[in-house]
Length: 461
Image (cartoon, rainbow, N blue to C red; front, side, top):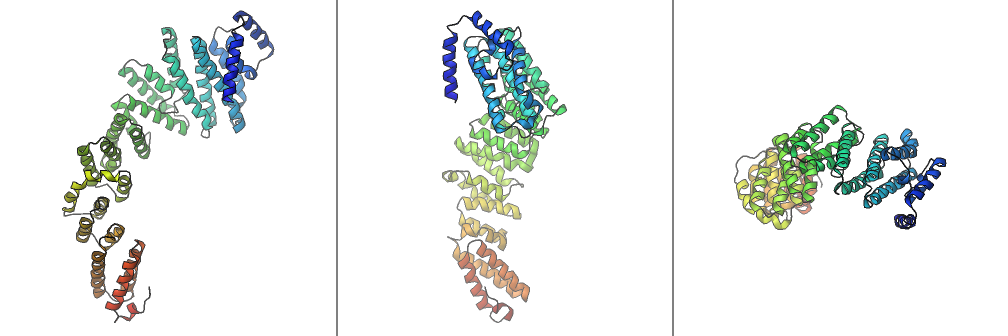
């Protein structure tokens, strides 16, 4: 369908080039007097030929008429009508691009600004369930608009565009939906100094705080602002946005990895540094993760080791999040951190949580001997069971001796049904860790060792 439209546009242009413009304008004007709805011949490029001293009004009149029933009754927007709407909007966007090639910037601007306004209106009226096609269209539209602004346009027209865009943005007529392709990004791109960019960001922050739109639109607007403040390395605004809790910590964490994966390490560093300053030590280990991955990718072993040290030493680190982090590191990079194992093994005081964190790290480094000795000295039997899967292949005999000694000591000091239940519970957890043969061997050993106890001997597996 799109290729047919392009061909039609090309053929139409060739035909129209054979007709004098004044004759064509006269014919269009005559037609327009009896046909008020132009959607049936938008593809013929005739709309821009209608005489009007104010092109903006002309396109606003068309779009308001064409979209009126949908703006008044958003429930009328179905999958089919969405396609019809997008066909019309896309056709106008293509016309605007064609007009740029003929240096008719005023008409092109009139189309762009109206498309931006009415597309925003449609999204706002249908929020929070706006068709994703409408939000995607803003990206394409802004991209085309940005292409025009990069041309050598007359200064008065550029000034008018900037004033109008800013007015529409700061009154909520339009809003940024995409992190980088949005009206705010266009204005910041046109700003000729960091002070002007900062002033615009602060103005928009003030507007959103006092006139918040629908929650989904508000969240997208905050995200766009954060992207832009990071893009222009505006530390003050970035920290201000984080302090305002405009986005959740999880969203900030995800955004940091998006910047990292997109190769935008400067933006990632600024975001992480701001997040560390705002959230403090409680979430430090989370926000250091993208920094660690960045250092590894940059072959900065010294910084990678330092960052890993901070993660492991944080009292708020947990073994579950550390497991997820280590899974994202190439096994070939383990050699960077091998020398760190001894520092942690030789520590004397371990909380239960910290023991698990260091145990996960040692198991990742495949330091089974250190891991076993550390848990044996500082942990308990349940901590050992949790790491059976890491120790089982190389430490089967040591594990058997460890559990056997524990059970014999326990059963020597406890009698009755509860002691048997405790033993069965422990063996069940050992089986749950995948060590079935070890558990069976231990059970047989205990039955033999304590065969004189009736309550224990008569219990089956």
